[in-house]
Each structure stands twice: as structure tokens, then as C-alpha cells.
Length: 162
Picture 1 (cartoon, helix red, strand yellow):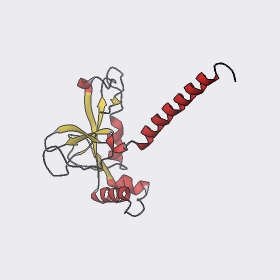
Picture 2 (cartoon, helix red, strand yellow):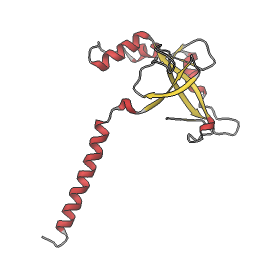
Picture 3 (tube, one colour):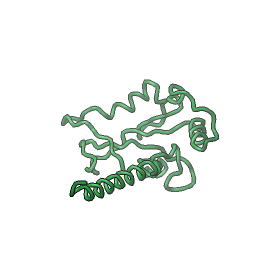
Picture 4 (cartoon, one colour):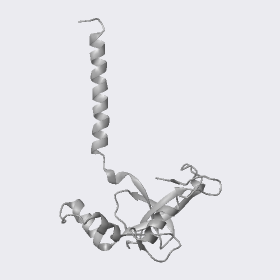
């Protein structure tokens, strides 16, 4: 055996153990712990909730499930510039789709609905709109894409995550 072999073996073992620990943590972590922006329209307040939450969820001011997912963008293109954050649009699911997704997560539901049907059950709107539009409608597609238009200075807004 070469002189440096035991040291290399120990270093290789430590590297494998370290990589295994990182892999284990990433695979076993709860995806629901990552945060996403939500908006409570009853108090006009943005807040962070687990990313896996299915909107509408309970808001910040009471037991009503009136809070919806908010897609937040930085109009300066720099997500760390909190002063440039704006809500691009809001998203919620129909009661039927929400029930089905929750049952599916719990392992008690039927097969999920098809993609096109689910898109009809996902609704979007801007904060100043009063009506919700199906994601798959012309108005819905416009809402989810308009925010990506470059501003007067040519900067394209960037999606922000909490």
C-alpha cells in the first residue's frame, strides 16, 4: 500500500459521508417549509406561508380562508431591492380543485383532473381587478404574462421569493 493511501481513504470516506448527509437532508426536507408570498385582501397585506399551501388559505386577520397566492416581482430586476417589489398577480384555486389536491396529498382522493381542466379551475387576477379569470382564458394568460414586459428603462422585472 502506498504511503498516502490511509489519508486518502479517510478523506474519501469523509467526502462520501458529507455528500450523503447533504443528499439525505435535501431528500427528507419538507417542501411545504419553503416559503411563498400570499396576499390577504381583507387587510391588503402580503405575508409568507408554506409554498405547498393550496390557496385560498387562512389569512392574517381571522379564520376565513381568503388569502391567495401572490406572484411578487422586482421592477428593478433586483430581488434584494425590497422597495421595487410589486404584486404582479394573484392566484387561487376553485373549491373543487382545492378539495381534490388536498385529498390527493392525503392519499384519499381520486386521480387528479387533467391539466386543461385544472387550468380552468385555477383563477388569476391583478390586485386592482374585481373579477377572477381562469388561467387558461385569454384574460388569464394576459395577466400572467403582462408583468414580464420590460419597463421604460429596459429592465425586465424578476420574480421574487421570500
